[in-house]
Image 1 (cartoon, rainbow, N blue to C red):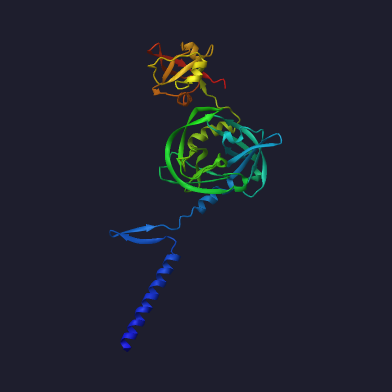
Image 2 (image 1 turned 45 degrees about the vertical axis):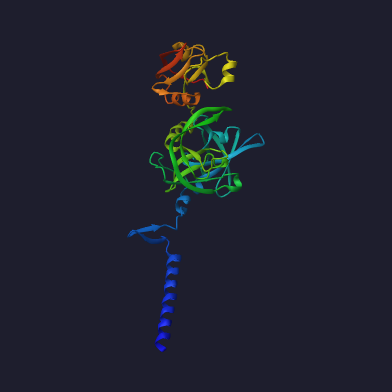
Length: 361
């Protein structure tokens, strides 16, 4: 009987000790749980903090407020990307500042500073502001969007609804690269296309202009768009930083982004009402493309002989099926370049070389 009691006590002590050791291990091991599958060690990470990376960018992120006269007209997010000659420079979206004429930024510590608009561009959806350098405590590190891969971890910092929620951090992954999305400009649906990064990190209207960062806290994109449909959730878009900085360098110097023009009014073949108003009737076998709704006098198109009713199907070697696609391809060229245009007239395919002029917009 005595041996049985001793054996029972030893078993109970072993069970308690084993449970205690397991509890201590699980609650004090930051690297997570180590388990074995098919004789292979697998680490399941339980501590996935990005706190150090967030701290690198956090104080560089600002809320951008704009007003017209005494009336507030909108707000968004921006970030300080450099200091020079006593100024701090801020990137945001053009649509964040487009409706205002006075600008103010709220920094991470709650202080505010008057901002000056240096330059903005509708098609790239970018704007650059400046503030006095005395307000700057942190400058964002610029990374490379071309180095990012699908599945890489990213995060955003911004003000998703208003300055009340400024400094909100959301995390996700790169869901896709080189996505071509159609965007609305000047109240025209499908007016332009943008090449963007896709992410499932939560992006809301107030996040516009804020940074999309890699796991090291470097900016690899500028939040710009969110696809909002009842059946779609968690799809956000950002302008790749590699493309954005080409425009930013010009905008910070107050230079306009000059783009080439053809000198034509563009209509989609599906724009039945606009075609009707223009007096254009397409043949039943009309190819997909962009209809020339009108030609400006003494423009590249008029000098090349393009006429109202022509259907443009290619710009260079790229097929184009909408005016958004045509503008996107056109703006890859420089002023003075010569481009071959393929078009249909009276059921026949024709080509013509067009030398591009400076856009009048």
